[in-house]
Length: 470
Image 1 (cartoon, rainbow, N blue to C red):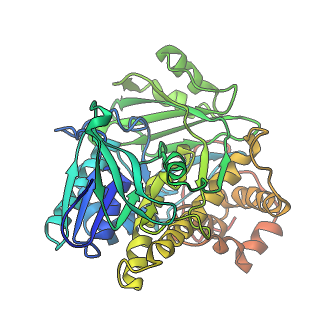
Image 2: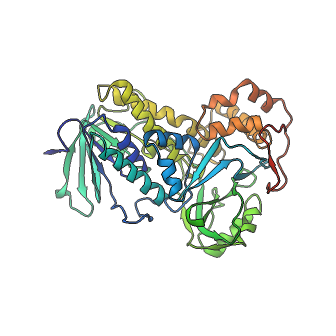
Image 3: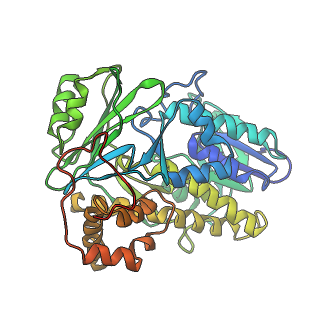
């Protein structure tokens, strides 16, 4: 028999990580009680945990994600900064090597990217989400070391979640009833299997896999530390990349990446040697002035996957999917956490507009989540499509034209303050993709001649003013 989580309107959130805590925040005031089902036990300290396999790698919050996070949980970005997260203005504090050369280092401060380790990010967001809940009319309970094993209900409506304690037997299963179930369980979501058990077909799924793998190691630079972070994404003629950015406590993370046949090694000596083979030797040269303070950690689960829960008939009543469980990106682009925050904010807005959990409200909320993910999805699959395997969906004529235009625009953005500003607005998720086809941007992208970027990385004294024309 199903257990009631609490009296009144109830919700169950599957997953107590970043997306789960943001889901809790979005639901405050719309339900009377929320139960969070979390597979792990939260560590006492801000340290890595097994249930977040990607935790040891680079994590950034784009400016659009920061705005969404601070709207949901005011003061959280400041709290992250106080906890040691590093703020990098783009492109002033993070220089990028493009296929045509180094991007000019414009003194532009509209977009701040927050660089932080995952344990600090998760802990700060969790602490503030639970504090916000404690000050609200919604009661929140977290069931740690508990896993969701299925949904209750039928093909038309989800009525709750079946759970069991980790390490327990099937006899220990119990059911939590709820008016709303939110799946925020991440890339490993088991919704297709759970749908099948309810007699529903799996939602339409789109996958683009570039076969990218990456490996990360933490360093402590010797004084003085580098003036700027470095980003060297791979491109077809040089399919290996690197990102070297500061995090808290004076440490820096180096992530090396490569597509099929170019995966970075996890052997420490080979990892260092690999850093000399990316598109520019600059990062490798910086390592001569840094001390490694961790082992090398690899990661290969990098495919882009979108499950179209927003389509008509794809979502039963009483169910909602958020974060990576709905749309997951190649993590090398640093979009996932920002999209999770934007998605949670979209859920709150949709429920506010609907006046709560009325019939059809979750379907509208799911459509809002999908719209929030659209810009990041288009950017990620556009970048990964050239490397995709034969089994992935082929690009149509529209996407091929868009790819040609974006390649030209990206080259122009490296040297042009007008096009570069538009590119960063969209990349940082503060403007829709239509910003890239405004008349001024199109004319400068298509009609002005292609010019190379800088021959070497911009250093102190090479900071260009935003109004400098190229």
